[in-house]
Length: 559
Image (cartoon, rainbow, N blue to C red):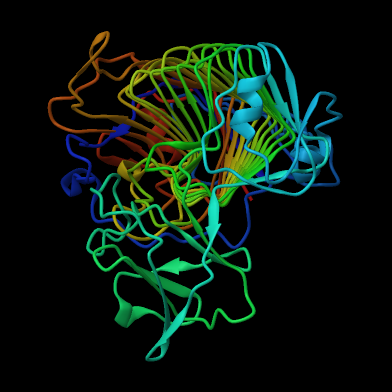
């Protein structure tokens, strides 16, 4: 592996997002080609001391004889030093995994017992502020949202399951299908944006489950087959493609399991499933000062776990998976800490992957720390801070295999993104997806101010780090602008496909010189001549990146 060291201030590529649809500036970037996932993640077996060559980067990296000790040889040309092999630095990774989160780590519960079949809210109403209520083992059908009083604990040490679904037991044969009538509500309006914007059915809430298995909703009775269903709201009929005889068929009905604006509540050790929340609303909704710990929140229609005006909430060691739209949402909640959660496989119901609120976690008008989480295989952005987040710290998370950006920091300010491991993100296909820097990468900073990106490992993503300046209008602090972004000390792997790192901007969103700096980063490349960098529409190789004043203290490594 060869190393060349360089240093300069930097500026990045950017994109026009005045509307929800992504508009690419093909004049700057050219057409987007197909995403190619490298056959190998770039791995550095050795690093080396930089070769210092005034003003240039050698297209032929210096070779290292493995059996010889590196030495310096004076010549009439500028002095060069052969690289010295060293062990690459390792980045901290979160300790959390599926076995260290969820009800298995909830601990005991001692208090008033709620048994299956009891009205949980009636029990809450009968108890004073600060009481502890313990759900007994078994399935608890929640037909009325539980609204805790201040400082109550709602918990289980017995893996109690709270479900928002109702059984569907009356079925009749209808041609090749089976039909059940009378369970649906009246038709209602659409909310949210779907990946399939022609059928537009992702917003429909009454999900159906066969023996606990999530069935796929289709847009007409004619499209129904085994494993799918169609809900005809006008006729109040549900059509099933699988014979329901001898099987448990259930339909999500209750919107929310637990929600209250009372402070100091603890929710612990519960499994919360099959709730029918509308888009952008949660099955479990935290209030101010809440502790939400060691729960499993799964297979709900829209958002699994939502924070609304939940200042100082603590969200810790939860399993949040297979929710229809988003795993975890945070709105207008300051100093909330999201730590050691496992957030995986969310957006099961087809919300727009590239550019709407779907995937792992999204926050708006909020602050706090997101640390030590595993955010994996979500159909959307892994972790998204968007619209006036202020003071967000994103640290020591493992973010891998998400369909859109690993981390997206958009029209926000005062962010720190550090010590994260971000791999294999951004290879989703469909509406709005692509491979240019307009489409994002492992880390995407969009029209934000005062952002530091440091000491992350970013490899094997559709792109490395994408910095975008767009015309985005005004926010609570005035005009949204891309300013004062520092990218330092990161390891950025780009070895295949169209992977690149850099900046894009649309007309009207120019960035003054000196506002974007790259320094001391370590780039793992397939070859130095590859155009793996871009500055406002100009594609560059390693030599051009440094010559453009970007990362003069960085190093470029090839294998």
